[in-house]
Image (cartoon, rainbow, N blue to C red; front, side, top):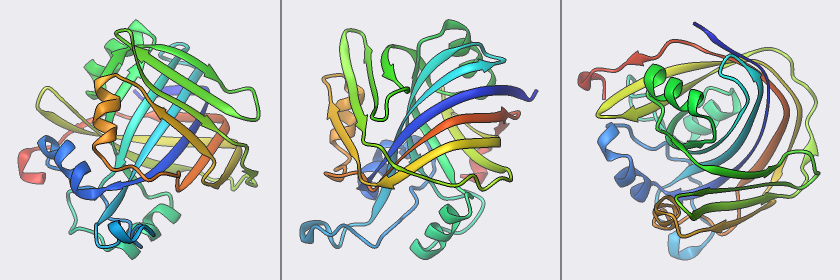
Length: 246
């Protein structure tokens, strides 16, 4: 430790989701979804608490776990060691890159990273098939498992974001076989970032993961989309969290 990723790239779409539905989906973890209202502009959803679901495709090009593709379904969550944050505090945390995310599903296409991810960090990795384009201006990713499509996601080009420099550490939570873990992801470089409001076309397939996403009342349009041309990061040791902390 740490496991070092020397070169990776990714694209992500963030959708508003029902906090109640997400809370039910992640109830076994004991974690609570981060509430990010202002609430939906749809009057039918105005009084419903909303959170954010992140769908992310990552290509690991050079790293200690070898080259592979990955698709993640992630939910922003509150720090279990602190009182629940207000929507304003949550937005401030996001602005400071102080995010905490539960990695809910994590299909990959490599056997070694599958074994390492599950055994070291408790990430819920499973084997899947990928069709991904990181090179075009319109990013595209599709993932299939057991003969069923999970998602097909296309991102329109975003606006270039100047390199801010500096480093950041994100806290990733995982839940596998009844054990909740927290793993710090230390980002040492992010470059070639492009982002925008909206800009995602999402099609859900017939896989059970897609069926679960349908129950979350995802927003019709993405709140934001982003792509990163180069990522460098380190995965630290996982900490097992006791039931008293959740």
